Image (cartoon, rainbow, N blue to C red; front, top):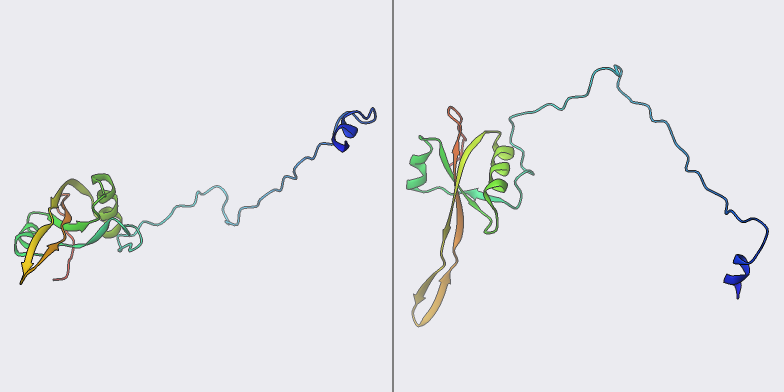
Length: 138
């Protein structure tokens, strides 16, 4: 068999070793001593909270909370406090101090002879640091 033929040869006992080529990379910056710093802007980052924060939850009760620095958002049902905190901080450029998550249960409703279900939802009540606010259009 061809497999054993190569093993039983008495010629070269060591297979040739392939050394990978190492390329030198040159930095494109003019001053190699100064580290590159990313600029942090307080502008809205719309891609940061995708999949976690759905929308602000605006009602009479939540509108009064903005004076106290608390804001309410509808969130995904499986999101946890850490994910919500990161999403709100990245989306709005604010510092979050505390989060409370509230789950509203689904309710059955009847229209004529038919039964229906109003789906439940999950809300997050977010407390911001003192002196910070979010502009939410109503």
